[in-house]
Image (cartoon, rainbow, N blue to C red; front, side, top):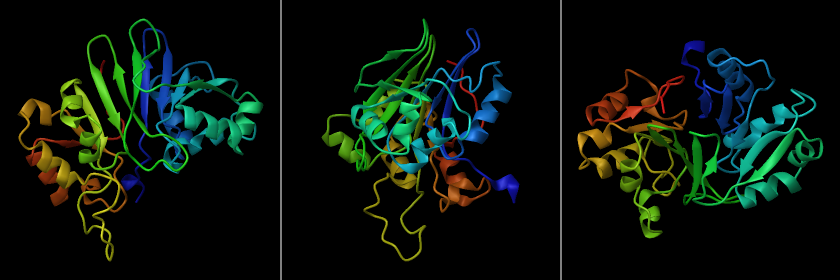
Length: 260
């Protein structure tokens, strides 16, 4: 059923005043997502991207870069922002290093907790999060506009590991107006025959339990993203979705907009 299709998680950042556009993540659905961006905020340039920001080197988050290559769009010097290990991975390993050699992309170095000023009123700040780091660091992003800020954390291990590193997710939520958080799995048991307790993601059920003492206004900021195909909360009429709503949270909707 085509109506049930969901694309891999990605954010677009659009400045209608300057006609600038950025993507956070280059997913395997890059072509469709770029088309949706062209519909929402058309520009005359192709691909019309002022930058792509990458969280890490897991396949759902960066492999869409291939569509910028000479076999596809043949892009020219699209800025791609990455942390040091991710920067090195792309510049030293094929086929990604070909994108660099052919100047399809222009790699830009990110640093933990150092803001990138996109223009006079928009900035984006990467911050390290604990997660599987086989080929690169893993980061989330804080996107800051003139009036509002957004948190984007598609992948993270248990919140408690971040506690041990000195960062509490509750403090991060308090610092923004919208928090897009890892909701990969709803609960242990959704994958038959496997003990999911050691999976490196916070279950939505655990996040809801941890956040239950937050004020209503804080819980309303949370929008779960990055849902696995096994996650029952994908279905709008599911008991999981009803439970999320009843507890004051949301599942992000494809195409939703947040004004900054």
